Length: 170
Image (tube, rainbow, N blue to C red; front, side):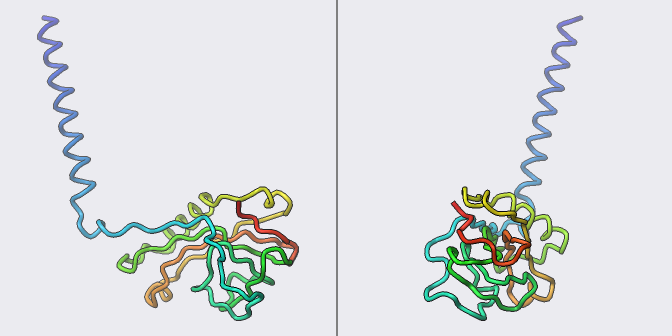
């Protein structure tokens, strides 16, 4: 009797594992629309972040580079002043994620969540401990997405104005 019970258990476990393998395989590769190029996360500056000479006024957000430091930063602004990080500034771009051009708009909630992930992935250096910093996130709206904006950005900012005087990246 116990041998029959053992055989039934083994068959049930084997069947369950086979079903699980088929289910996982079908859900991971069956939807061809979701099989597109992955988004690219950048959390380290590639020196120089923005070409010299600095400061540069009127720099558009689409051209910001990881490592750029900003004087009198306004996250809603259409342009900013990029300065050398060893001069007084109020924000630094510490991480960015680029969705592929072919990606469909994922929605504001998904982009907000992704922006949080981008900030969590940012690696800060020892200089960050010298300042009272906050994270600011920026992500595309439906309108800017339709215009080609595929960036999710993470900044560290200081509430006290242009008080940061070093790069906060490692």
